[in-house]
Length: 212
Image 1 (cartoon, one colour):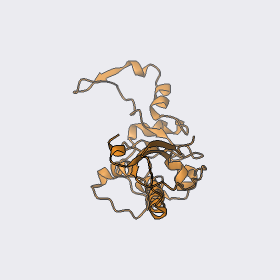
Image 2: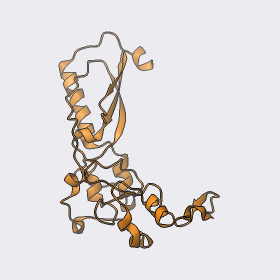
Image 3: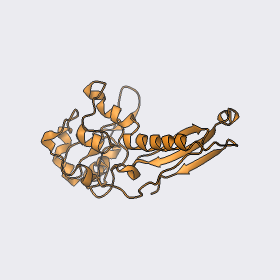
Image 4: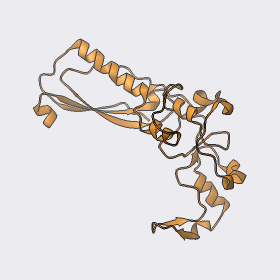
């Protein structure tokens, strides 16, 4: 209402990174306040698989900050594509979920269980949302994804210079507005300003390009 009262229309754009040439399903929304009609561009509804994106990257060319826990390595080959590491651990350790330990903060945890976000990505699909938590295992190798692979799966140039210390790199990658989405909406805004079709009555609308 405040934007409309000031003469701006408001558009909520719901988008999905996988429709912008990047092998990651990342659904987000942007709020755009504008006084001219937006000139939306066509979006390719296809997607790139993780194997297409990172399949040719060599482990020797990657950098890693977090090593895979040694105690996980003997059984990680049981974790199938798309499976959560903790679920596989529970199947291999029946009854273990009943063995509890309490940490200093008073919360109750299952002793020895891998963290719940850890999973093996699928080769034939875009990967899920990359977060600041180290959680994505390679679809073939029993290791976390390297930072270069994460950059590739976010549409960020491989020569990107991190501002923080190495331990913060994944957090930087996860919190960034992914460049392909930023470029798309910047081109939409540029074309809209150039066309300069004024909006007579400010409104609120939703544009949903998330797809499946």
